[in-house]
Length: 202
Image (cartoon, rainbow, N blue to C red; front, side, top):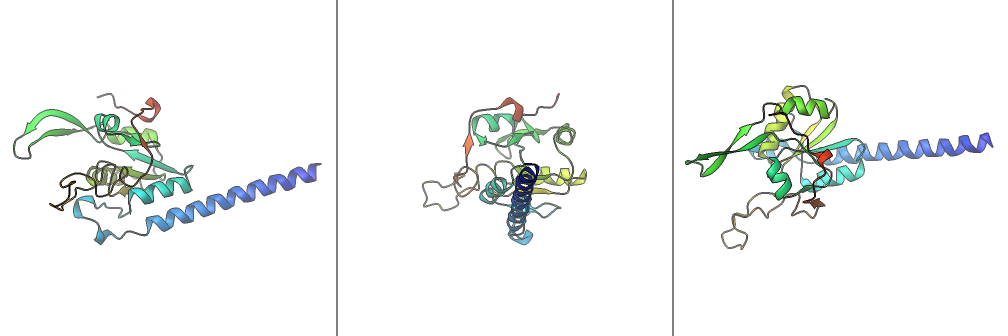
């Protein structure tokens, strides 16, 4: 009886080891597929680690136990635009009510607690995939995290909504329909799990 239990236990251990090994190999394949020189300057990071939203979701499917997905958009974006089902929201900036006439938009203020909140949420060697709207703020977040000792942080370069369509003949001209988590067919939701929203005190 004990012998049979040991054989079953060994099979389970070997199977789990195989799953982890395959998962990490799949993660590595996705991470190495995008070169820094192919990334627009505003989306580049000091760690030079990039994935598309489609690759990010496939990586999460392959190894969800060892991957974290971080959404650094504002809380308003996370709630009203929608978010990846498994993404945790820690906002890099907050929306202000100050109008920038030159940029024709309301400005955003940095979240001074961003790094402290991230440090409480994740370990510095965790594999973290970071997204924003389209890859710019997530690049800033990755760089800030790298400056504070995080080493396995990847920019999801097309973000949640994707890049703007530049074809003037398209009905989607200047709309964010080119790529991105939503446009890739990845799962997303408007429903908010409060355990996945980590707010600072400010």
